[in-house]
Structure formats: C-alpha cells, structure tokens
Length: 330
Image (cartoon, rainbow, N blue to C red):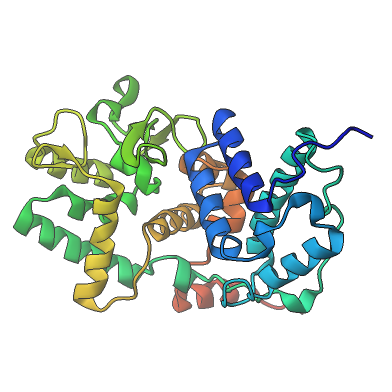
C-alpha cells in the first residue's frame, strides 16, 4: 500500500487543486465554469468540505451526497438524476486526482447507490416549451424586422437569421463575412469560430474553434442570404457580420434581443437555444434525415434525437397524419 501524502488536505482544498490541474490539461473554460458554479451552489458553504479528506469515510460521503441530492445543502429543490450525474462527475474527478496524488487510497463514490425518492422529477420538455411555434415565429420575425427598419441595428436580425441557420449563439456572434460563399458556393456558410468567456482574464474573446472543435460547412437558404444582404447594407464592419457602430456584437447583446421582445410583447421568454431547437425540428419535419440534421447543427445524431427533435406539427397537421391510417378493406 503506497504511503499517503498531505493528510491535512481538506475536501475544499482538493477541489481547488483539482481545478488548477484541469486548467493545465486544457479543460475547456465552459466546463470549468459550470463545475465551479455547481460546486459553489451545492458544496462551498457546507461544513463537510472543510473536513480533512483523510477523515472522510464512505458513510460520510454518502450522507453528504444524500444531503446534496435532497436539496438540504442549498435549501433548494431536489436534484434530478441528470443534475446529480454532473455533480457526481465532479466528485469522481476529484477522487481520481486524489488517488493519483496519493492523498487517498479509494474513490469511495464508486458503486454508491441512492434511493430513488431522493431525486426530483425532471421537467418534461415539449415542443411548446423548447421551440417557437409557427405563430410565435411569425410574431417574433415581424417585431424583429420592424425594429431593424427603425434602428438599423443588425442585432434585431439575429432571431430571424438563426431560425434559418440553427447555429449556437456564440457561433453567430463570431460569424465573419469571409465565411459566406465558401469555395464560391453562394449558398454555403462555414462555421468555424465561436465567442468564449475567458475565466482567467474575465474577458470575452473569439476562439478559432466551435464547441465541438470542428468547423462545419452548412447550406443556407436564399431567404437567409436576403437577411445577410440586409445586414451588409447597413454594416460598416468589413469583418464581422453582426456588428454595430464598428464593434462586433457579443452573445450578451444578441441574447438581449429575445429578452426585449418578451418584455415588450408579453410573449413567453425563450432562450437563444430555442431558436436552434426550432430550426433542427423544422429541418427534420421538412424531410431531412437525422444524420443530415446533426451534421448541419454540429452535433451527434444521438444528441440531436435526444435534445433537438420535437414534434412541431399543428393540430390540423396531426389530424391529417392520423387520417392516413385506416382499417384494412374487408
């Protein structure tokens, strides 16, 4: 049995040391940020994380995990299975690092099971909650085009364009004119960069890669090209598609358009990601295969099917579908 080192290290100190190690091995900033947020919410203010790692045995860890799952550590609702999976991944990463550094012999969380009644029920995601209906799209687009005519601020054209593009908002904020018409193909756009927040410098920058680290060339419709032409006529930036008064528009500025729309019209507030889900669902319902949809959106077929595919058909369309199913002729 290897001799253990630093028996005085606390659970909180282990988390901070593990986070520094992850920075050295180039864990993405977004992942680091999400893990920091979860740690601060569920663990940082508890007495357990101030205990020495060496003194925390398996029953102690299980009690602490049960308190997190049931919402006791932050006075909130019980965690869903998915959210607990994200928190458990943090603990497993910490314990694996602690084993490598000889701070502990075992990962006490391995094989640990919890009663089902501790978990909260996940919110059921439907087409109504996750996408914009046809009526909502028409209302949103009219509001956007009207405000663009008044202000000439291209930020107002972000929602209509993304309903025809389905890109992540960070990718849209980093779009360049040089990426339109790839290899002299007018109706194709290369998505290669994305806006990111640097957790060290606390600054917003444009990274030379997307969330999946893979550039993708996607087809765009003539209607989308018309919106780009509207932007080009008012945009004074030779580089960025979404720019105003010579400066690139950020994710925050683009996202604010949907917040403003909701505030002014009373429409339900929906995030920028709902534009992406709407496009994916519309694309599939228009006849594209799951593989084609996932390639255009830049994710795997499994992720597309699970997270982006919703039934956006109207009641009349659903009635027409079921009317095609009949009993066999006698």
